[in-house]
Amino acid sequence: MKQAHHPATEDVALEEVLSALGDPVRLGLARLLADGRERGWGQLAAPVAKSTLSHHLRVLRDAGVTRTRQEGTRCFVVLRRADLDARFPGLLAAVLEAAEAHDAGAGVGLRGTGPA
Image 1 (cartoon, rainbow, N blue to C red):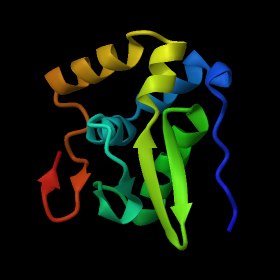
Image 2 (cartoon, rainbow, N blue to C red):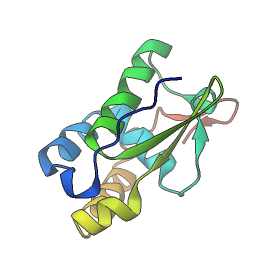
Image 3 (cartoon, helix red, strand yellow):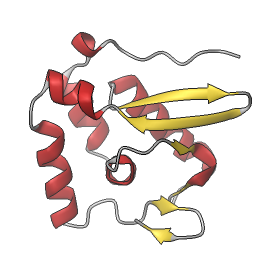
Image 4 (tube, one colour):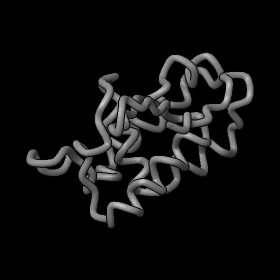
């Protein structure tokens, strides 16, 4: 099975991270993953088509915001908090805090549990 590309920590670009987190669905995914838990793609629910959700997950991965792992036919995603904090100290915390305060990305959640 094809392995996903993840940029090395030192190659993560600020403009790519900010662009990736500038979309409400992707920001909601980051908020959902902020607890540090790895989630299966099938667990994720968003107000977009499955193919669009897959696109959003790819954008986050390509920007260095998340790491994707494949296990057989299943895919799992986790927030690269330590890498982002090492590269841009305080950035992720500030973005997530502001997103929480403004309820940004609230339409994203886990299947069967409602929005995050």
